Image (cartoon, rainbow, N blue to C red; front, side, top):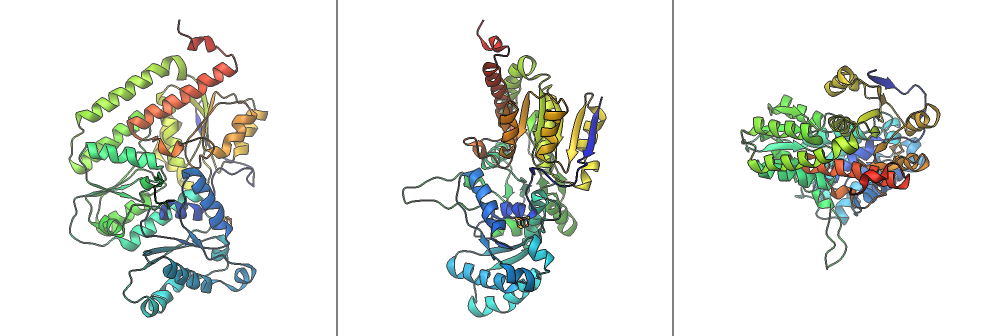
Length: 462
Ligand code: SF4
């Protein structure tokens, strides 16, 4: 009776949990101001990803495609990147940052995007756009390696690597949030503000919860500036909240500029939020104020109302980006729930060495499966054919059909969540996130009790 780390044994994937690397690079790039990426590949590599991100955030934003066709797939398509950069610069006079994001097809045909960038820097930019600040950054994200998760990690590293410039110490903390929602960014900024910590929040998408203004539709842009990225080399330290979404950049800054890197924790739940604040305190010397002790107390009180009566022993399946999935698992355990299945949608070989997974393997005393390279069939097969009984599913909207088909309540969390209103606005991090998640889970279970007439009398006032 313990926690096992398993690989999906089947070849092939039935209903994938993650999409491909370029998607992660696109999500990172929308966090930068005055930036429009060019995805070098077929148009679908942008169209579907953009649709997914737009459906998730309910906002419009800009991203370009080199849009290659059959001839380019055979003979190469570097010229389409050159034309694409030129068109972007002509059409958008404010654009300064253009990542060139490769895809499976352009990596296979061997298009030399680094060479194209060199050529553009030597020819097009000085001749047609003299004096204009333009940064072209090649980002290699072949879809046949890893997943959208490493795509995000690689892109964050490449942006930081390109811009970070040694200067005077700026006394700021670099915060790499990883793949989060606007609501999470607001919650993290709130915690840092309460501690009076001056931080550079990197790949910052808070403004993707955009207003509709009287003068018309709003196109959303990220808030991390070129100066923010340049200043990362001069910070007092880098706190990367996620091991698989931003740690590469934190390690680069440590190795190259001696900026100390701290990786984790993903501040989901009380325990991990406590650890996050303790890390911030260690790195900045700033005390944790009483206001946050009160917030913590309110969260503990809210959870105490739910745990024993309603959440304890509830059987859960969890799937999400790996740092989020692991942090949700830890939070569920703290709430005395039983995460029976945790699905990680890629085959990252480092999961084996992840200290959080090691702790789960050492300490969990009921049968828990952590399945890597997992797809939705891994979950459905267990429910349909192997007697897995669940009280709750935690995960993004792509797993909704399992919840519907097998009548299992579900709480939407992670990316993408498009089939419930406003999920992107609510934080899952910090003490506020702990309250939100626990109450969402409890309310999903309460609704299920009412629909199934399953001990619904417990919800009565008596
Ligand atoms: S798998 Fe390849 S073709 Fe499909 S979206 Fe990803 S990069 Fe594009």
